[in-house]
Image (cartoon, rainbow, N blue to C red; front, side, top):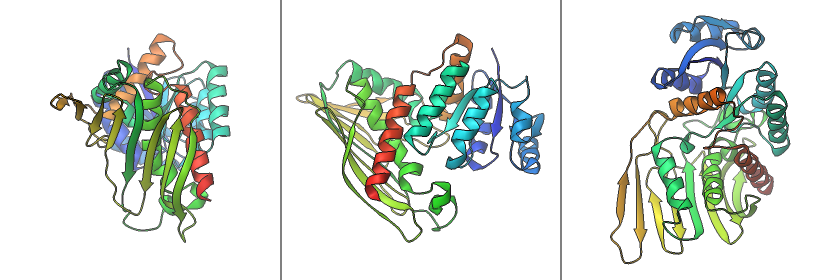
Length: 325
C-alpha cells in the first residue's frame, strides 16, 4: 500500500511534512501545489517531488491519493472542500477552519464525497497519546475531575501571519488549539459530553488587532479544564490530568515538530510515582500513516482525531475568541 501525497502550500510547516514522509510506512511525496507555481516548483525540487503546479493543476490529477494542506488558516476550508470534491483524502493543518460553521460544512462535504478527512493536531498521534488514552479509558486515576494544559511562546516580532487579523492570526487559533484539543480528547476518552461550556475567560487584544494572550475554563459535565495560550509569553508546555484516584503529568506534552512526547508520570494515592517512557516517533509521519490506513480501509474518520473532536474544538475556539472580544 502506498499513498501518493500532494502538498498544498509550500511553506515552513509543509517542509516538516515533506521531510517526515520518508519516515512514514506508506507515504511518498508526489506533487506540490501553490497559488504561485514558481514556489511550488522550488519546493518540489527541494523535496524530490516529480510534479508541481497550481492548486487546480494538482487537484485535477488522477495520480494523487491524498493532500496535505499547510496554507494560512483563512484558506483551509476552501482548499479542503476543493480537495474532497476532487476525490482526494485530506490532512489539513490545525485549525481546519476558523469557525464552527465552516467546520460543519467541511465535514458535510467529506461525508458527501465519501473521502477521509483529518485535522492535524500532532499531539494526538504516537505511542504517548495512545498510552494516555488507554490509561484514561481504563480509569487508571479514577473519574477525571480536572485538566490543565498550556501552550505559549514569545514570537520574535509582532508582525507577519501570527499578528495579522485578516489571516486569522492570534494566540487562540495558532497555539490555543493544542490545549483545547487535548482537553477535548481527555473529555472524550473519559466518556464525557463534548458540548463543553467555555467560561472564566481571560485575555486581551493587542494593538495588532489579534488576541495575544488568553486563558479559559472548559466545563465538560462535572469535569473542568483550564487552558492557556500566548504568542507573546513563554508558557509551560505541559499538561496535568487529575482524577479521583490520582493524576497524570506530561512534562512535555506537545513534543516537537520532529518528535512526539516521550514521558508521562502516573501518581496514585499510597503508591510511588510511575514514570512511563514510550517510543518517540515523527508526528507528521504518524498523521500521514493514520490517513493512509483510513484510505485503505474505506473509513472516513481517524480514531485519534475523529470528526466529533474537530467539531468540539472548533466550538471551543470560536467561543473562546468571541469571549475575548
